[in-house]
Length: 527
Image (cartoon, rainbow, N blue to C red; front, side, top):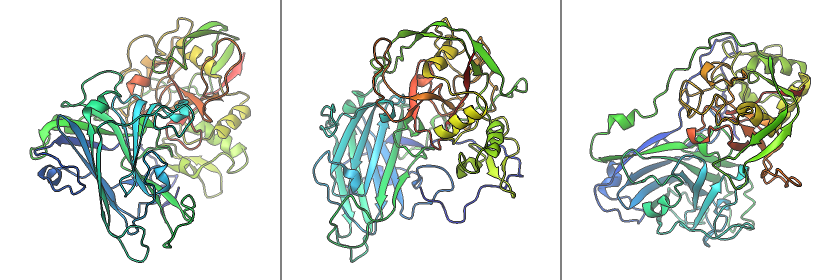
C-alpha cells in the first residue's frame, strides 16, 4: 500500500461528523445496435454509454492515486452483459498465453461478479493484454474456506469455464518492446446471461430492468523495469499496485460485500436516465441513541445446551448441531473508539495502532502533539475499527477479559430459543441494524434499540463484524475438530456494509484482522 505524498488526516481538535460512504454505482443501459466483440468500441451503443469514474486505490483515502488511468463502461441486451475497459499503459508487456494460468503475474484487468449479492457463487475473470483468459467460479470466498472452480491449478478444484464468453483486445503500441512509449490497451467482452444465470442461487431472472449486480474491476499493475528479455516473470523488481473501480475498504478483492453496484436499466444509452434507478440506494439517517450507553457493561449468558447453525448460506461446512457451554459474560456493546484509545495510551506506544485509525470517517484515533493518542471529538462512542487481531487480544487481556469463542458468540446472539436474528425472527430493516451501506458508516454503539437481544446485547447484527478467538474451519460437533481451512479469523454479526442475505446470526464469515474498516470486536470472560 502506497501513501499519497503530503496526505494527512484532519487535526484531532476538529469535531467530526462522518461522511457517508457508498460503493461505486453504475447504471448499465440497453444497447441500441448489434455489438461486435473486436476491441474497437466503434458501435453507437459504446459511444453513448457513460464511462465509470477513473479507478482508484483499492483501500482507503490517503493512498496514492493511480499514475495510469483506467476506466470502464457497461451495456446490455437480451443475450449479453457487455463490459469494456480502457487502460493507459506506456509499456505494454505480457507473456501468459495459456488459458487458466496465473495471469496476475502479468499486468492484468480483473472482473468480479456476484449476481445475487450474497458473497456466494461468484465469478472472477482475469485478462492480460494478449487476451489470455483465466475464468473462475467460487462457491464462497477464500477466507471462508472457498476453493475456486477452474481448470485444476488447485487441489480439489473442478474444471469450469464461463461458457459462451467473447473477449477481444486491442493494443496501441509495441508489445514487450521497452524502448518506446505505448498508449495502452482496450478490452471488450460479452458475458452471456444464460451462463451468468447458472451462478444465481435465487433463480431470479437477471436480464431485466432493475436487476442489481455486485461487481468490481481490479487492475493489477506491476512497475516493470524497461529491460528485455525478462528472465523471471514473477520478480517484478519494483512496487505493484491494485487499482479498483469501487474502493474495497480492505486490501482483499475477495470481500464481495465491498464491491460496487451495477443496475440494469431498460432505457437505452440514447435515452434520458431513469430517475428512480438513478436515486436507488439513497442513504437513510442513523437513529439517535435513546440513552447514553454504559460501555464496559457486561451481560451474563447462562450455560447449557445451545443450537449452533445451520448457516443456510453454507450448510455443508456449517450444519446444525448442539454444544454445551458454561456460564460466561459478554460485553453489552461493541468496544468503542474511546475505550480503545485508553488502552493504546496504556500499551507500548505504536504496538497496536495503525496510521489509518486517524481516519475520522471510519475510526477517529489520532496522535496528539505529545505523542499520546486522542479521540477525534464526536467519535467517542463509535465502535473501533481498523484494528488487528493482536490489538483486540491485547485489549481484552488489558481489560481482564478475552475474545469470545465462535460458539459463545452465536449462543449470545440467538439465545436458548435459537432465534434467527438477535432480536427474533423478523427480517432486518433500518429499525433493527446498520447494514448494506444504508447509513454509509458505523453508528454509535447502542443506537438500534429495536435490534438488541432479549438479554440486552446491542449491535449483534450490523455496525461492525466482531472478531472471535479462532480461525475459520468447518463445524465438527462430534469427533476431532478439523484443521482450519483458512488462515483468517472468524468474524460474526455483519457490518454496516453487509447485505441482508448475510445478516442472520448463523452466518459465518472470516476476515484478515488487520486494518479493515468493517471489523471491530466485543469481549467476553468466564463467569
